Length: 264
Image (tube, rainbow, N blue to C red; front, side, top):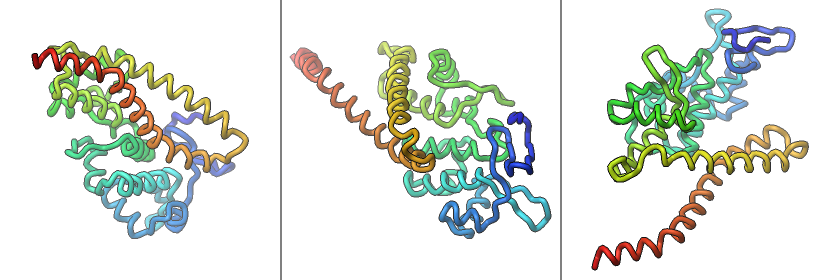
């Protein structure tokens, strides 16, 4: 089966392929309620905000849903409950608009799940570099430098380069670092971010190996997914605290000496 074709119907095995992966089809609204724990009134509100992929309509009054709808509903629910986002904020973010509030890594995972779950997802939900440049004049240069370092991935869109939400967020974080004084004038450029990529790959490689070693053949797939959903944001915070402790221990005494000399 060629999953890159726009859509394939496979009645013999009950799966439909829509661009990225095979998706089981012909779920009804009651199935969505059962699978997600979200009532149909709320699901319809999500549809009105344009947060869910449109269902397949074999007849005017018949709507067929699939696993992409389940994933999207769960992602919206997570963004509301765990990240405190409102439906208008989610809609605006998916359309490429900037929002004032900060978002954690878990929120970006859910937002990308929403994008990937759209039936006609073809990259158009990504953020354009041009839209980012309105608030960040360094977005073009930083994005290309980060792409050369393997930190972000630039995609060609109809109106120029595009970024995933997570990659756009990394550009936004570096913009805030610039505003705090970490810029070329003070000896800080995108080049210094290279070791973050190496550190991330090292940690992720060992995490994934350890997880697979412990769960394969012992825990079913759904349980493993549930565990990862909880573990990823928790261990991200855990690693951040370890890094902070190590940083303060290493920079503390020397930094104090520099301050004393400046005061003198």
